[in-house]
Structure formats: C-alpha cells, structure tokens
Amino acid sequence: MLGFGKGDMRIDLEKGSFGAGEKVRGNAILTLKKPQKAKQVRVILLAEQNVTRDTYNQGRPTSQSTTETVFRYEVQLDGEREYPASLYEYSFELPLPDQLPKQPGLVSSMFSGRGKIKWYVDAALDIPGGFDVSKKVQINVG
Image (cartoon, rainbow, N blue to C red; front, side, top):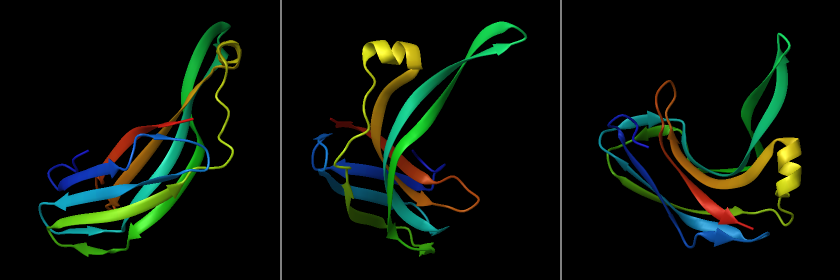
C-alpha cells in the first residue's frame, strides 16, 4: 500500500507455498520518495481466521464476524531513525511453526463459524502518527 505519496513497499518471496517447520524467506523492498521519520521497518508472518458468531439482538438472531489472529511472528528489520529518500532492501527469514493451526473441516466450519486460516507476510515502515508504507501478501501454507 502506498503511504499517501511517501513511497512504496514490495515483498519478494523465494517461493509461494510452504509447509510446517519451513522458513519463509524473502526481501522487503522499500522505496521512499522523500525523507521520513519512522519507528522501524518490520515484517510479520501472520495467520488469520474469520470467525462468525450468532447472537441475538432484541430476540432476533444476528451474526457478527471478526478476524482472529491464530499465529504471529514479528521481526524488526531496521530501527528508529530518519530514513532518507532512497531504495532499501531487507532480507528476512520467518519460521513457520512445526505444528500448524488446524484448518476446520467443512462440517465443523458450518457449526463453529470458523473459516479457513489464511497466512500472510506483512512488511511496513512504521510511521508514528501517520500512515505506514506497507504491503501484505497472502501465502500458501499447508
């Protein structure tokens, strides 16, 4: 995502599919158009699951959906400073757990309200009080 004209973040991965215990390797490539004060450059390996809960509102059934994080692993790639306008490339390695969170089966997902787990790599230049320069890409894990 563009940080409103501040620059661009790109994620290049060695491959797109991974298994339990593997390492997700790649590069986060940050391009800044002008100098920017930031807290850090970070990358996160993230697993999210949509959860729908049935509730009652004034006796009427309603559904409420939320996204829950089932796995998160964060690595700081660079620290707090002023980043001059330039191109930055950061290599990263993010370990997947040996035991992956279980995907719900078709029947259990219908009754539990739990959707499929989706995995992402999310890289960002963390700008305090402003919009981050970030990119989030989905990966295949299983």
